[in-house]
Length: 166
Image (tube, rainbow, N blue to C red; front, side):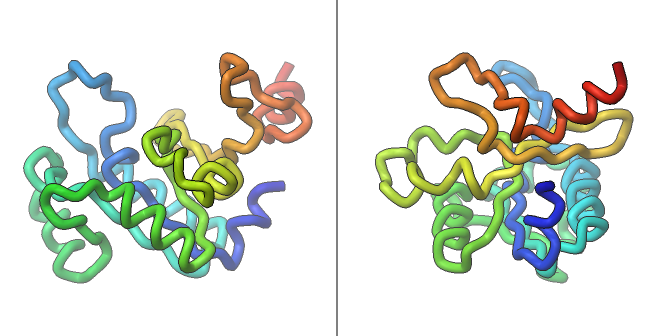
């Protein structure tokens, strides 16, 4: 099960992606710090050895709990990418250098021309959803690109979860 993959691993959270969960591009965006905190809680529960949250620089203007967010920045619980540089660049570089997992619903399509990204990203990325205030993580390597995102039921923990609920 994928929980074994998290236990003892270093995990990078794509903070902007997590904080903006549920927003469409046309929405007025408010980033939710609670989303990031819930993912951190879940990763600690699953015994990740190190959790690093990297956010785009502009998140500081749209985050809902600015004081708490600023305290987390000051305490180095969050890292902001420099203005004008997407956090994805740092997330991918760090994951490659340190052999980390990534929590993000981003497909990193604009980086797929990089051989390492194209070869590895689906195996190191955990997608997520929020259900009733709890976060659920799922490896994306069960999702087949170009096949209308059909999940390989043998690889997906979700399939076993829902199959047993029926």
